[in-house]
Image 1 (tube, each protein chain N blue to C red):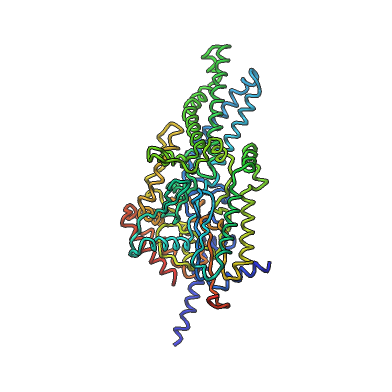
Image 2 (cartoon, one colour; image 1 turned 120 degrees about the vertical axis):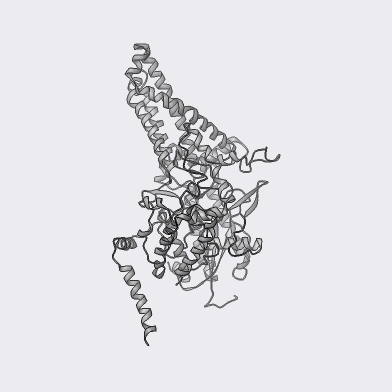
Length: 479
Length: 145
């Protein structure tokens, strides 16, 4: 009979109907097919991108806006209320210097917040498979469902033994001084800390901007504080203290803000000056990596020996380019990095699976399971506090809990936030489906995720469950 | 232009037999340097000396990009004074060297590696983590050169 002949024809028709089905989302995806998508749209980390990939920030930016508001309001009040008096009674250089400082502070803040801190792109599936093969070979073979213990490679740098840890999320051996930020879910080179005030990680590429920001902000704060006090004193000499306060009420607010800021900002600047001069990161300092308390002959192998060289290298060294090509267009045949740490051995280097991997990174992990680091602490009043307090929580996370890292990423299937912030990420429905048969799989993936809300909060059992479901998805996609 | 077509044809027509990864060498610190050890999978394909020479030149180029000296300090200070707006007009020294590296790799591929059925991928496309060497199946030429 001609059933055999008809079946492939029928299948083709079914596919055609599927893709031409004109729901509004399909026409939208059809439109998107014509405009090639940029790599930031499928970036696997927990970042936000603005201006078509030019601006990159962490997910939670509320505190950053607070920083901006504080700086602008305080400076604005200074220029509006204090500067006219000071310019006419002392010298017009005061508002000029204040203006230059203010612009510099703002420029450095925006540069630190908006730039890529030095994120390491995740390994492509082939790379990850190659590394796993090497690790398996080194360790002897283990069962398919068993996760091997965290791998460590040792390397000798300048006479000191440094351990390179394997990152289960990014599937790479982290370079020395790199660390995985659990808030942004990225490995960052020369990771200093995640700063909620700046709304971004501070790493190799933006450390100098961060330092210049806090340094110039210290000067600005001291400047404003000093001249507001001067202004009040000069006015009090003329018309009495209470009248002076009545004439310029903004000064009180400025003094209060500056007084509290000075302690924390100047302290933080001092701390970072020490770090720069000894060529350490906040991360290393807090962990005491190079302290002599750990071992008698412990020393910092990255230090150049003298303070001046260390400072010059940190502030005037070469500007490394961004390793994540945010604004590049996605090439259909290039391998895309995996978004979830699970799937070891499930991704042989064939094109189908790279498409699969390219499609799934759209689903982002919820910070619920990475809750160790949690939302930025809002209860703290001192400005310097949060910056240092967040640092210790990140490095311990991936190495001590490989299963959790996997489960946390696998829980990406169900994330309410991804839908809320869909104007930054591409939500699953908007995703174009040029993948032919595998396009049938993805609705199943989304549905599969939606069906298991209750199982979200039990990471231990999620691991094997999600491994099985991913295997199931992979099988479907290869049909 | 004809040479790039050869490379593209190689990619599309030849099947990928395997990929070899040359990892980073961190013995000198955090600078970008790749291991020069000759991978065993390439033994039958390319001359050891040639490969090591390619890797050494690559490492030298990266060292030049990351060199900390008078020129980089000057660039850094100038950039700081202009509040980093100068990079809207000119590219950084590092970026210039990266372009040089891209040209070098393309040239190496065209002259040496493509005729042997190999393709070097620019490390910047892999986040400076690895040098990816794709080994293509030698169907037309035959196995075991």
